[in-house]
Length: 189
Image 1 (cartoon, rainbow, N blue to C red):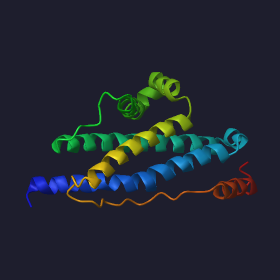
Image 2 (image 1 turned 45 degrees about the vertical axis):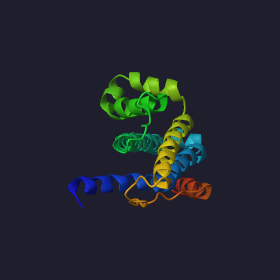
Image 3 (image 1 turned 90 degrees about the vertical axis):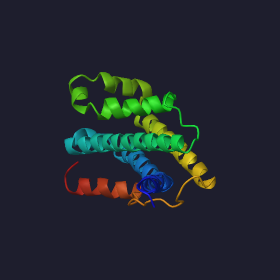
């Protein structure tokens, strides 16, 4: 097999792995963050500076990680769609433009944002809450997955099974309650 075909096969393995990534990583990560945000008592986040720090920064890291992964998946998918002679997902689509801005401005300019929060204000004005940014990220992930599944079904890919990533474990309300109870018992709250 030629080098070009080897590269295309690797790209197809990556793309074919995206549906599993969406189901086993994106969705559980979003569900965990939303549960974390809703079930950690507000007074614990406010009274315990460590918990306040951990909640905000862990959720922000998940938003950033997903933003990077989804932007890269969109870009790679578009490159492969072009190679296959298929119509690309639009680079002028409002979802793509917002995804690109999340990647470029929020993630790429973290230090600048800490000094001048112009992009953070855009983020809050555009989305307003973690629930809305996560809904947006999930919508983009679902669109990418849908396009890849369409390519797999029409047998345009050199492979039909992708590379697997370690799945994210979903946690439950009981897990958060155990955490809160442990913090109370340890005198951290």
